[in-house]
Image (cartoon, rainbow, N blue to C red; front, side):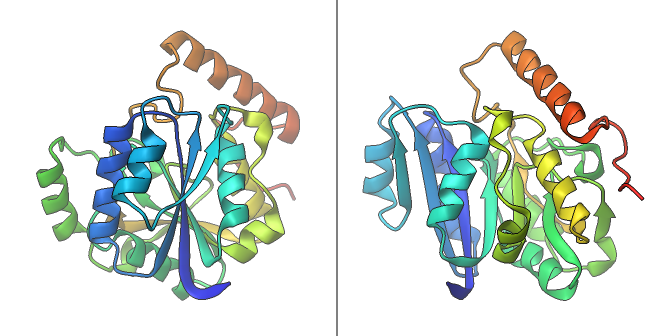
Length: 254
């Protein structure tokens, strides 16, 4: 295990142009040592070959079937060699100082078990309203906005899985992302809740913005109706598992 390395896991299914844009931005704007692992879930658009050709340093797990989102993350984490682990959706645009800023939260706050940035498409506590669409404008905004300011850090009861960073010891202690959530929805709320149950805090890096296009990166081929069905089923699973509503404040049990 490398003590300075962050292993970033990115589950994908098709959408090569989206993945390509994400990776180009990630490598251009990440100034700390990283290992990138792409979990390729039965893509049929040539993602595997194109990934190998353009990004030879990226490690790739090729599944012959479409694995669930949580299962894909767990696959990547098992391959990872970094002291820190990160998730990031392929439909994001990581920009200036994104990872360095988030890692600083983890290093400066000993009780922080997991941290995440602000975004335009995320949970309410992490939401930052912007009208940004073009990559150039997003990078210009991020260059100005993403400046270290610990006064902007804040504790939350949940974090969105589109971009999460945490020490490997957290994953070793808390365990895998729950694969019963299938293709996604609420697996991030479940994981961050378990982090809090172990006595750690979830902290939003309010000095960091990562743009999230939100094209339903992992279930983009599903209809809105099916997406609603998955969300409803996973919400019910969370409630059965934890005896609480994930859409309400998640206070810890006494």
